[in-house]
Image (cartoon, rainbow, N blue to C red; front, side):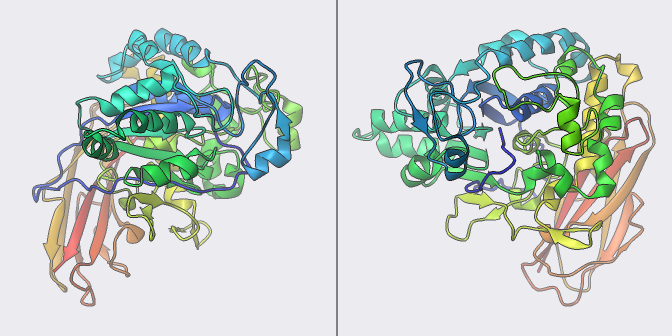
Length: 502
C-alpha cells in the first residue's frame, strides 16, 4: 500500500545477472514470488490486476502484513505511535489504524473463481482458485513494524526461503517489510549459533530478492539491511507514482487518457465479477475498515478535480510488472528498464538497486529528464494489456485480442566495432491473425554509450544503423523492437538487442 505523502528510502534488486548465450537469452522461467500486503485500496486494485496476470509468474505466498498506514492492534487497548515521522505527526497515538481485515484476499479469490473458466481459455498457466486460497496466510499485523514473534505468515515465508528449490524468490513488499523481517529473524535465531549458519545465510541471501515500494515501516533499515546485507533489494521510491495516487502530477497530459474515467468505464468496468471489485473514483464503493477511503464519493472526487471512474492507484503493481516476461530482458538486469521500471546499482551497496531523482529517462512530452518516466513510458502498452485481460474475463477466445509473439533473426547480444554497419531483424506472429507493426528505437538511458544512433528503416522488421565512430570499447547500445498488433486493444511485445563495442 502506498500513501500519497510518504518519504522514500530503500529498494533494490538483481545483482547476479543471468548468463546470456550468444544465440540469445533463454526465455526466463516463471519467477517464484510472495506478496505481502497491508490491504489499502491501492493494494486491492493491485491485487485485482495481479490475479489477471497470475499465469505469468509462480505465486507461492499471499501474506497479510501491516504498515505505517494500516495495523490491527493487539485487541488489548495497547497504544502505539509510529516510528515514521510523517505518520506519527498525522495520527499520533493509536490502538489500531485503518485496518481492512484479513479476509479481503479470499473474497477477491472468490471473484477470480467466477472468471477463472473464461480466463483459462485465453492462456495456459492460470492457477486454480483452490491453489490461490492455499497460499493465504496472516503475518505480523498487530502494529506497524511488529516483528517480535513468529506468525503463520512469517513461518510460511521462512519455509519457502529454506526449501530446496534454489530459484530466486521475489518478495513483493506492498506494505511494511516486517513479516519478511520476522521470517529472516526466525531463520537467524534458529541457525546463527550452529555450524550450518554460513551455508544457511548464503542460501537465503542468494535466494531472496526484495522488491519494495517505499519503506512503510522501519524494519528493513533497522533489521534486514544490517543483518542480511547480501539480500538483493530493488527499491522503488519515485517511479511507482506513475501508477499511484499522485499520477495526475506525474503522468504527462497526453498519457492521462489511459487513466481517465472514460477509459476505465469503457475498458474495465462491467467486465465480470473480479473487475466489479476494482475501486475507482466516484464509484460509490467503500473499502471496509478504512474510514479514509472516501474516493468512491463524487463530492470527494470533485474536491480533488477527479471525474467519475478515474483511476485511483495501483502503487504496488510495478513489483509484479517487473516479473512479466514481455521480451524486454529486465529480469536479467533491472538497469535495462522494463514494465517494472528502471533502477541502478547503489553506489554504496552492491546488493541494492534503486531509482530516485538521479535515475531519469527523457520525457518527450515535457522535453525534460524525468524520474518517473522510466515507468510512465510504458503506460499505453500496460493499460492496453490490462484492457485485453479484462476482455479475457468475459469473452471467448475468438472475440478477444492476444499479444503477438516476437522473435529475432539474429543474436540478441552482439559485439561490434566503431563505424561498423549493424543489421537488426525481427519477426512476429499473431495468434489472432492480426497484422503486426514494427518499430525499432534506442533506449539511450539503458545503454552506456552517451550518444544517439541513427536508425535506417526503424518502422520495418529490418533496420540498420552505423556504430558511431566515437564509441569506446565496452560501451553498450540498447535497441528495442516494439511489435504491436492491429487488434483491439492493440497489444505490444518486444525484443531487445544489446550491442557492445569492442
